Length: 249
Image 1 (cartoon, rainbow, N blue to C red):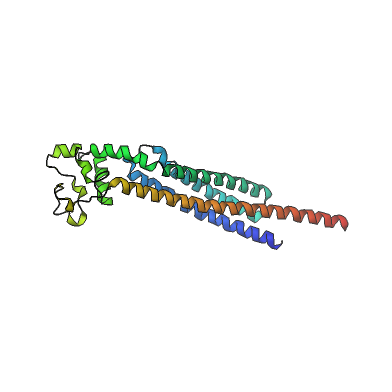
Image 2: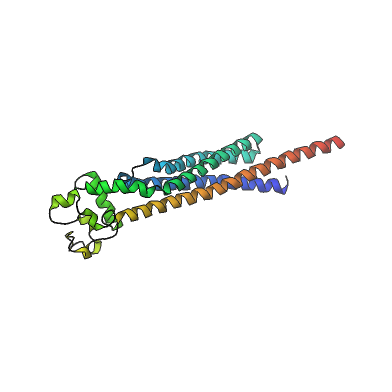
């Protein structure tokens, strides 16, 4: 067995192990993206924005199986197994490219998808409904108030019902919450930053992270396909040379 075959087999075995590690990593990323989007689900009008995360998780499951197939095929030097390994890697590579493209497309749609649902959620806030609890959680965790600024609460259902020209307590700064009454006349006690921009920034960061991971593993797949081609070609050349040697003996 020449150095090229040994190197190719070593690379394929290493890549099989990487597939298993990648499956675990992609599962974590997909779950993290889904969980992050779930927190802001009431504000997302287009539910297909979750499609990249679903694709990532599906790819992770398939990748674990592929790692097992690749390991067995490489150890046995099975041409059929290596061929199947190559085809599956190619399909996964295409799926990752599709997920990357979808992520890039939805990056530009996040702001559009957020704006109207967030405006409606803040307008309908009454402090009692599940949607209202999501708004409170959002404002407390991100230390923000209102869609674009704290004055967005003027004209909302909460503002009209309360009758005291105040915003929800979730708008209060954490360090000043004991002295905060939510009065608009005391903006120094309130978080004045917009929630829309912060949510958009978080979702953009999550999506960028997911796309970076997808790109990295797509590069790994490329080297995996290259190694399979090298190993297959080496085996074919070795077999041909052996046959020639026998004919001249």
